[in-house]
Amino acid sequence: MVVTPDTLIRPRPVNHYRMFLTCYGDEFTYGWHHVDLFVHDELGREVNWVHWTVEADGPEAADASVRREEPDLVRTTPWEHHVSEFGMHYWTAEAAWD
Image (cartoon, rainbow, N blue to C red; front, side, top):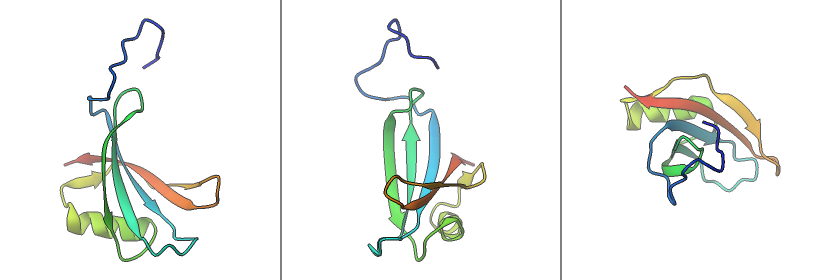
């Protein structure tokens, strides 16, 4: 969707348009291994999110955790690797309820 001056943007996002998983690498030894599930609206604004801890970092641990914790949640795209501006490795993948 292209946002123009004529586009009505509600003050807070309400439409569930995109859902995706994010998992991380613990390069800075925070000791907080986790997976996030984000929901965004059609304008890319965050509608909601939830996270849970996992035993290890990266996509394999995230997939195992999703199968165990939310078996009806399906990863619909391959994991895509990213590196943040401050050097943290993370992966994202689209997701949907089965």
